Length: 318
Image (cartoon, one colour):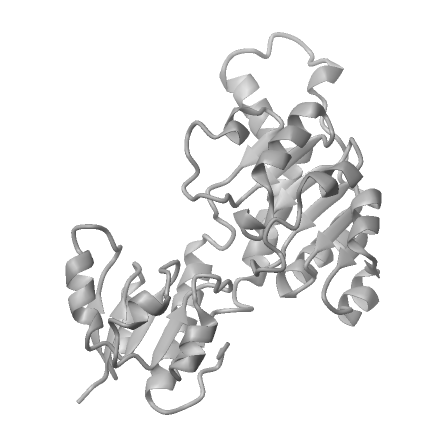
């Protein structure tokens, strides 16, 4: 008898076909209040889960006595209670590496858009406000030859450093749990303390995973250490930043601007103070959101799933 799996996020038919060669699949393009009872019914006999964002905790696991593997189609896995999964002998996997270039492209684009005020200038033209040559009050700031501080020099951070150093002649500072000798050798990156990075950087790019140690790691004290001309970019998770402190820093001129792909609450509420600020560029958590990359992520997740259920060690076991 084939193992039973639940795919709880929309994936390409190629991915479903691959899984169906070895598994029986219950497919939910999106979980909502209407199909949640059916999902819970399927969960009782499920051996595997594939998707992202669903909180996998003790409460859910208590309803899945047959579960053997949980596969995230994402790099981050803060939705998974790893301790609880380990205690129950349930494997957990993610999908690193395949999205490095795409996420790095997004973050460099966000940095450029914020520095050169591209969304603001786009609206300026579209709304018919361009009547003559623009004045200095609408100028942006340079990116090339500036100092980029990267907090979290993992695979994506290193890929950002590559683009910034080789493409824009930026000086790279980084803060990480351990030294990244590859980034130092190839991109001239300099390891430093968090405080030194904040003080010296023209651009601060936050790329850490969300853990108890990184939650709210950037707050009032950290913004006060930054230059008044600094631009803050967050491509990690919303909860790594104290959003109230960020709003205060932007309103007071403590920092120049911010570019955000992530928020504490997602989707962000329309009345959130950050959305009313012209010196903030916002994206709806689209770091890896291209068709090509999401297909690779889903297929890698499916590969992890099938391998685990066939008694093999999944390629990306957490």
